[in-house]
Image (cartoon, rainbow, N blue to C red):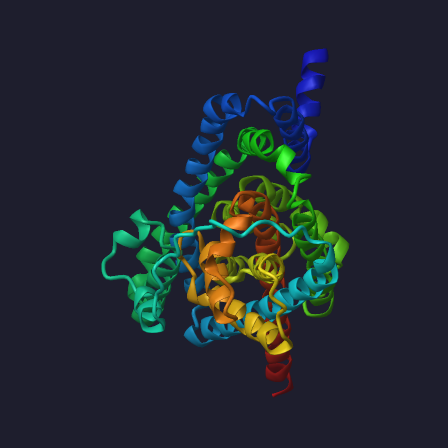
Length: 418
């Protein structure tokens, strides 16, 4: 009888609670393993990698089938275009706000930043991709490669094209629609099975990070990291709370509480795409329509980079201070514009944060080698910026859903009046 009660108690702990417990245990274990980080890296991290691989494995079929299912359920290509346009506008505006917040707080703390030695720094800058190449790379050249390489932008384009084609075919496509919805349900159930392993995955991913970087966090870059995390917090509270309340008709407290499982997972895994399945689950529970969430969230996981934009602003000011360079106001405006446009321009590029930072530094004439100053603790920055990125994706899904509901209600009233 007692055993049954204990099992029931364990089952009653919500996923967010389980992940939080795993996160706390990972920090404690990581601190205990400092000085012996090789143990955490060799024997704990592999299990975290296995879990992350499982999550990444399910993301591509989830995105492909859920977007197709969402597009088909809308049955209107113009509606898909309206949702896409609203989402991209929201993502670009919040990214511009994020960069501005990053620059504002970085300038406040600038006088207290440590001035690290810049002699002998080196950084292998990735090959720049031209605007036209970026546009060309959005479109897949065959059916298999985007899925095998997890090129999310190309997978989204594939799903949209196939979804539009099914709508245009009409009644004859009904058997295909049925099978797409069935496969979507199968992959969603697979996702649910994998997400039950989240607490174990979180522990195994975070513990080695703390074991390796615990001492560094309170070291020379502690204030720079603190500045970035203050910006992440302020952006979430100011921008997302206000937009969710005003445009989404949802209480900010309810929003953040509902998003807690995805937030905790994103923080420990530092993977926007990896958090996508959990983000879908959280936003739907908060009231986002499935057809909107399955389109807006994969798009956001690819192009929305509010956290990364804050990282650009904070790191640009820090690197400039280390080189003894005072950035002018026009240069800061350039950083805002570059970071905003680069968030879409580097979509789908591996290590997009570093690529964007290189572009931002070059835009204002700062040495790209300065990236080496922050590269050592990039994972710590990444945990926070990923958390902010996925929270921004969720806010957009809820806002677009609410706006679509209001639009549909207006159309219904107009028909009744006629």
